[in-house]
Amino acid sequence: MFGGQFLPKFGEYIKNNMFSDLESNDPCQEDMEITEPKLNHEFVEELGHELLSRRSFSKWERIMHSHGACLEEVW
Image 1 (cartoon, rainbow, N blue to C red):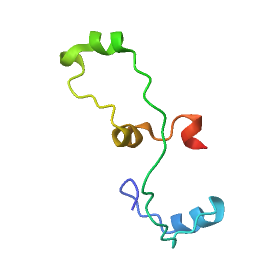
Image 2 (cartoon, helix red, strand yellow):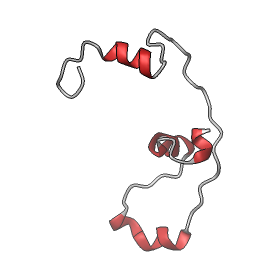
Image 3 (cartoon, helix red, strand yellow):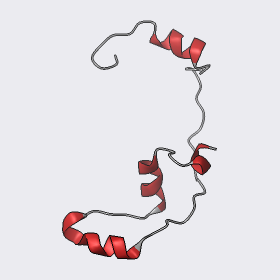
Image 4 (cartoon, one colour):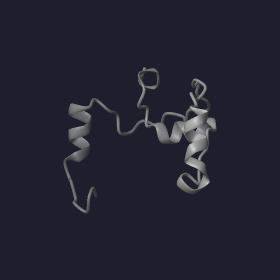
């Protein structure tokens, strides 16, 4: 079920076009190396707590929200 639609041939499409093994049980990644955050302290301070009440620069929070967007993460 994807977007409320039943897609009976979706698994076959993934296997044939994206060369993915849907039966794979790869272990979870335990750790990941990332670079230190590049903070613009003046900008963060200017935002204050009213405009940006929740912020985190922790390693795993950054990983979960980055979506592999930079070249280093993609590589």
